[in-house]
Amino acid sequence: MDVSEELLFFFSALGAFNGLLLGCYFLLFARPRSSTTRFLGMLVLMLSIRVGKSVFFYFNPDLALLYLQLGLTACFFIGPFLYCYTASVLSPDDKLYKTWPVQLIVLAAIAIIGGIAYPFETHHDLWHPYIWQGIYITWYAYILATAFVLRKQIKKVFKKGERCNSMEIWLLTLMVGNILLATIYVVLDITFYIAGALSFSFLMYLSVLFVFFNRKNKNILFYGTPKYGDKKIDPQEATQLTRKLNELIVEEQLFKNADLKIAEVAERLQMQSHKLSQLINEHLGKSFTVLVNEHRIHAAQELIRFERNMKLEAVGYDCGFNSVSTFYAAFRKVTGTTPAKYKSGLS
Image 1: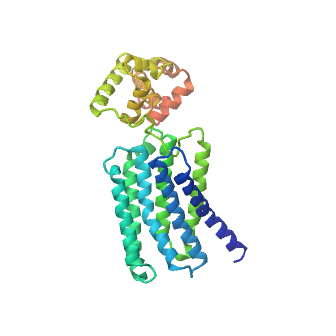
Image 2: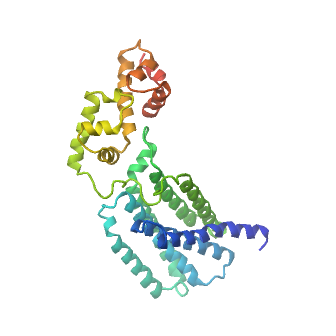
Image 3: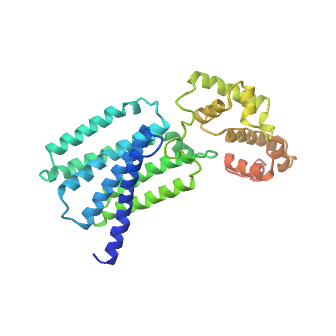
């Protein structure tokens, strides 16, 4: 190989090699030891094996067909482990997710029995295109299942006034990365085959940087929304509590208190702060700060509409904001425009 090929091999193989190490770390050493860490370890491991196969096959077309079969078999499990990892973080009580042992046993049986009965070496025409297509259809099917689990987070991305937390961003990144890799392998022919490996290396180190810059959140890889444990608020109780919460904030205009804290509201509702935070996060899909600011902005819109002579700065202070800049930033985030433009639009 010349220098350019050596560099190409180095960068394309780098992600696969480090992915193997990282996958083994999650499986054997990462804490806490849970199904979530194991799912992440298996996901990284399957991706690394699949990408590693691409690298060695690209630079050595005479690679033994057994290794090609191993790489494609690993590819068969990427989607399932992506789904299991995401669901274990966000929807551990989901009925479909609870069947994960059955799903993985069935998939493993298919891979083992099919691989033995129809090995790649003697059934190349069967593996390509038929088994190959089945593998990628399975990958895409589980990506769709993952997207369903992440449907609330996907809506947040396109909804004004909503922001995903670090864990949600991580999970969305994993899903998008899987879509990208699967599409690269399906669309690009053998001439550009190495693009999948290079993309994996890039995405892997991008993910490492993301985790590094979020290192204060020690559980970024393993815990996200379910920070309240496995205790879920009963839907009927949640509906009643949400109604009481809105009545309290609106009727007593608590939002006008610039120093309003969640503990104060929780005390008025005779509940613990962490339970109120859980209620707002899980059943309203937002944080306490966002909820209060939405009420403040709604009140500000009313004042601007009916008190035309009132200065905008005074409107902000009257509705509970402790600075003009905070008021303007929140108004734009909630309404998509500035207070001045909103006011001029009423004329």
